[in-house]
Length: 196
Image 1 (cartoon, one colour):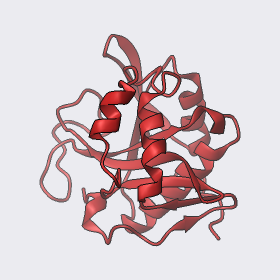
Image 2: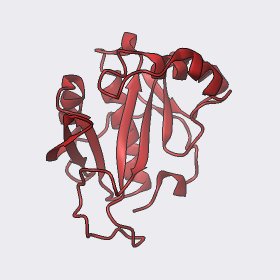
Image 3: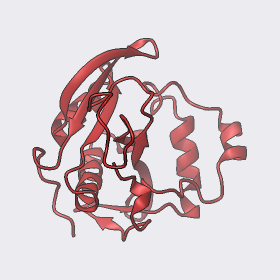
């Protein structure tokens, strides 16, 4: 399977009805710190990191890497969406362990991740941004599936997965909790929202 870094990065900004998905900028540093320090954001992600540690560790321009989109509303960052190659050694896979990808690797899959500031929750921004990122991915890597892992206790993520067209592959135990693994394939998923 190709990696998001094997295409030109960053791509041109992706515009939806309300949002822009773009590369990270220096002005986004405070939002990255808030995302990683927020107890609400990290309820199902292993807990927040200490703010003072983040102030020292987060670079001037955070998140400058292939596969990471900053989600902006009215030019201000409200979250991130990531499309990252997942470690083949990690629990839960959409493909059989012994199936090789196009590059001869085993089990590595692209996973969708997202974090939004709590004040942005409940307005459909995550669905809009994730659908746009999946649409970009389908164009850049035709036919490639994307996986999503979340705790079954994370009701918001479970609803978002269903809304985006992810279908359940399996449930398994990891990090002391039941995890859910779903897969999205471009040919079976609902189309992304219009991009302007």
